[in-house]
Amino acid sequence: MSDEKRKREELQEKIKSLASKLKAQKESKSSRGSAWGSSQKPPSAVVENSRNATRSNLQLQLKQKKTAELRKEISKLSQTIQKKTRNSEANQKGNPYPRAPQQAAANQDKHFCFNFQRFGVCDKRKCTLNHDPQKKSVCLKYLMSSCSDKQCLLAHVADKKRIPVCEKFLEAICPLTDCRLLHVYNGEDASLCEGYSVLGYCQDGENCTRKHLLQCPNELTNGYCVEGIVCYYMHKHPRRGVARSQPQTNQARSRIRSPVEVKLKPWGEKGKNHVL
Image (cartoon, rainbow, N blue to C red):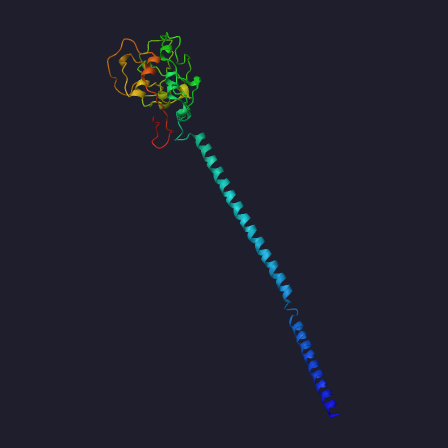
């Protein structure tokens, strides 16, 4: 009987210990619940609040970026509008530095074939430059009514964009009343129109502020002219050789010359249009 009593006592002690442990666990749980009261929240609620805060922060950052981009675009548009208004006002009042009209013509003519423009023929089979018959240079003999060549390669047209200025008119000694050359005077300080002197064409015609004088093609290609005083063209350098009784025809000139491409630099740094 003593053994059975001992066993019962041991079991009762174990049951008491287990009951005490259960009570302790319940008390700990109740204490935790009381701690997360009105002032504090359970961890799940804290996580949700943190997520909402991050979302709101991201939305604010996106809005700030969009507003900054819009401000930049508005500033750029305002700058462009101000520039346009300034340019329009300057043009209305009279711009002190206007772009000369012959500059645009020279830039347009820089891709034209020199041989076709001045001689009427291009010897190159695969020439990639522009060959426009409506902008071919005019025959000076035709303007002086002395061209007897029926197969003349130059233009026989009285086009003011291709007709040069009468040099005798500039010297005030032109005796002809029906002169076919241009009688235009732009002043003593007027410079030479490089685009017209090389290619024989200017888009501005008689409205150009520079002199329209054709430079001798032999001088452009070879560096000098052999025809002497008889040559109809303008010369920048002194003429060589003896004056001939009759000038060479256009075909003879095309045989003597070597095929050369002439391009014009656009107006820019030095303020002039230079021939390459």
